[in-house]
Amino acid sequence: MAAVIGLSKEAVSNILRQPSLATLDFANDNSPDQCVIAGKAEDIQSAKALFKREGALYVPLNVSAAFHSRYMAPIQDEFRAFIRDFDFGTPTVPVISNVTALPHDATTIKDQLVQQISSPVQWTDSINFLLNQAARDFTEIGPGHVLTGLLEKIRANFKAAPLPIEDPTNSIDSHSTPQIDTASAQQIEPVSTPDFREAYDVGSNLIGGSLRDGVASADLVIAAGKSGFFCSYGAQQLGNEKVLSDIARIKAELGTKRFGVGFVPDWKAPEADIHLIEDLLKAGVETLELSGLIAPSLALVRFRLTGARLVGNGHAIAPNNVIAKVTRPSTAISFMAPPPPDKVKEALTRGLITEQEAEAAPYLPLAQDICAHGDAAGQSNTANVLDLLPVLQSARDRLRAAGELNAPVRIGASGGFGHPKSIAAGFMMGADFVMITAPLQCTYEAGTSSRVKQMLQVCDVDDCDYAPAGQFFEQGGQSQVLRKGVFFPARARKLYSLWQYHDAISKIDPKTRTQLEKNYFANDLEQVWHDLERRIWKEQSSIEIERAQSDEKIKMGLVFQQYFRQSVQYALQGQSNQTVNFQVQSSSAMGAFNHWIGHSPWEQRHAADLLSQLNEDAMRVMRQGLTASIQ
Image (tube, rainbow, N blue to C red; front, side):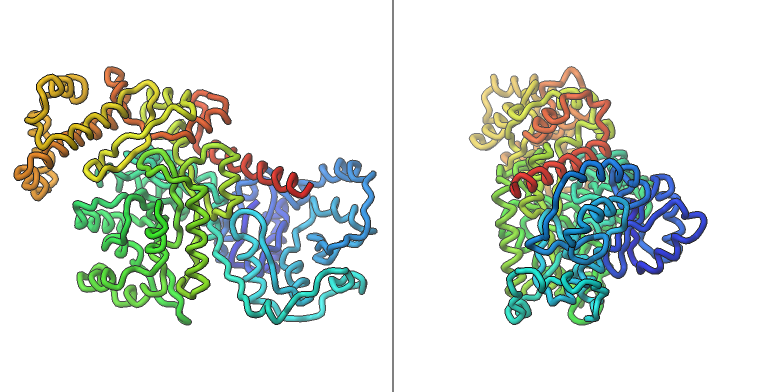
């Protein structure tokens, strides 16, 4: 199946009449400018070029069959036999048939339930029928806002007119339902958030998060993207040359499909961040997955506003978007707001943005996608995402009610999602998207060593621990890492403790220092400093050298942070003689995933299959839960 966006139902139907498309059927009439077609997978793919030539956005969907088409006909006979012995009475609450776009009648319910298996879904006509009956209050049940978004498009094009109701009893008014309070309903204007899938041109609201140091590799992003899943590349801590090379390859493979790039600001070097953003913009990056920032930065404002413009009536559009992973409500609110005026003014003064882009700033949220980031692999503050998510949703809704949101903002969730049931829980709580990270690093495409993948494939829910985060060592930041089979968490805490209680390396007792040099660094600490000094000079970070030369504690902190860098490289390279020093970001989600998938070998775990199966099973859990609640 494929969504065709930008063409009317009539236009799509006319195109399908072409002989070369005779194997495809019209399957869904979703809105005045969005339809779905169905057929064999290879035929769906072949039709893409033709629809794109007609100016349509063409999105193949990640589904298991060609629903609502001729290809479902064989199932109808089986279902007809199954339903034969059921008796249906007159509905006490009207139910609209997706075959006729009219209320079901007791005499035809069985036939229409059979017909709908292979008949197009008449969603547009169904909504038009309800609008023509003066219905104004619509509630969407389930994850995301897909139907609400379609509803608003239909409402915008609706013109009251008599609909072809052949039977006068086929009217909502003929049923004993509560009367709609039209006076109060008119006071509440439904506000819909554009659906994540439509905004990112993907087939699922389940997405892959970035894993630093290229663990979320170009291969992983490409594999996920080709299967209709949005995924972010793990650019954090990689050199610019490697990052830009991988981005070029991703874009070459995915074409116009969107993907994200992980970005952790360097609070010590804001100018370096601006230069990196410049490179990413030149490379055609349109989405940043942001973490580790508690206040808007100039680099972020530069990225968000580049290409932004006003479109009239107090609205603006921007080609670049930010997915901001946050752990605090105050941070989330700052990202829901427009870019700070002082930052916009500075960016304009420095020539980082144009006048046109600056004029659009007050009408755009700094990040249109906010991700409630809970207890996750890597940098973590142990927040419970199931508590944080509704708090951020409420904050968003309050701002919207007060008229302080100039554009829709989506709220998603990440951290602790490794099992279909936990993913379903996130969606059931109203998350617009759910991001998974830990399970992806134990896939064939992940950019880490086979030794690490072997360790992760047997990880359980209690095999992880918290350790100081190297990037935020001096600030006391925490990172969640694998504990089973390694000494890294304990050794990282030991280094942080030494840094807290000593003012210089020279103050550490000889026995402890010898232990550090032998077991931690495999080098003399002074030599570690000299090597580090050369690297920093090479990177033209003279300010950091000057700070360390004038303060022995700063120097000690920089030396100790080298252990964190080495431990990551040991793991990425799979150095067997340094296994105990491996730093592997992980969380209980990895263990939950292993229990679900059955501890299968990592060689058999492919990112696209993993995302697809998690998505499918999460949807099954939600359907089962909804059925159970109704019963």
